[in-house]
Length: 368
Image 1 (cartoon, one colour):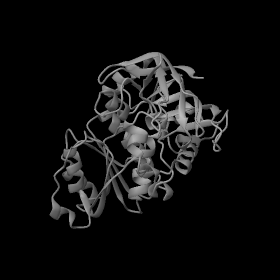
Image 2 (cartoon, one colour):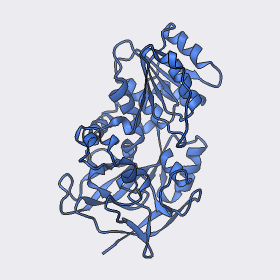
Image 3 (cartoon, helix red, strand yellow):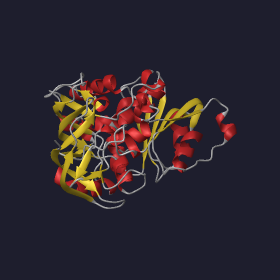
Image 4 (cartoon, one colour):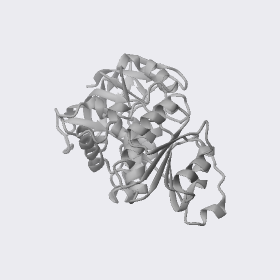
């Protein structure tokens, strides 16, 4: 039997989200049905909804879900009905990167999460009036009152922590935190620069504040976000609308440059500035994603001082260990994620989209 629920469907590229009744397939051996409590809204959702990626539409998106398990398939062992879970990306579990603790670089990551719209075996997970919809987005498609979720997308979490406060951990927050903790790994005296003070960038600022980094520099064009960055741990801020980034960073670092840079904007001009601002042996982490095929010109001789440019997906996080650690930090008040969140009833998803696009909301979270 199919499982009826209500979902926000994107009918075609550029169309708004439409609430309608859909049916979930019965859970397979390694799947669970999750009653959604909250789900974050991410720029990736908006990029796919715009038609910028070849995800099959009409479809159901959403990939920062949090909820309560209602039913599990016969082979599921990690969670049980009643468990509180945060939903993240899925992966095959068998390729070299999955076995090596790097599931964000799974050999089948793109079709399983971003563009396939179906399970690995090609079967669909969501239908409407007997017609299959694109689903299985990040193994979850959480823009719905109930979601059919891959076991590898499920992370059991502390039931004492409100799910609304931790839904964004599944993508944006773990990306920003992982850029700092898993790639840059700042040491005492380091300078970390975060380009862009959106949800991912501010997560990186909060993560850097929990390291021995001495200088934490947030760069943006919105004064309110720079003020918030200071409250969340930035030691310096640079308004890119008013100051030259290279000159500002030279002043902050005494001419040495940045040891680590997190680029979240997806703007290749900003990326180039970040690479030029690196110190010798410094590392820039590319997080922001411009359209496929976008290229950036770099000064090759400028890289010969040991500079590194590293691409990053989802913080290179092993979710089963990483997300519970972040939940604990939220619970203890050491990762003040609530400062980024604005909540909206699920029915107001299009208002959340508008507010996010206008910069009024840093991290919209839909509640059910």
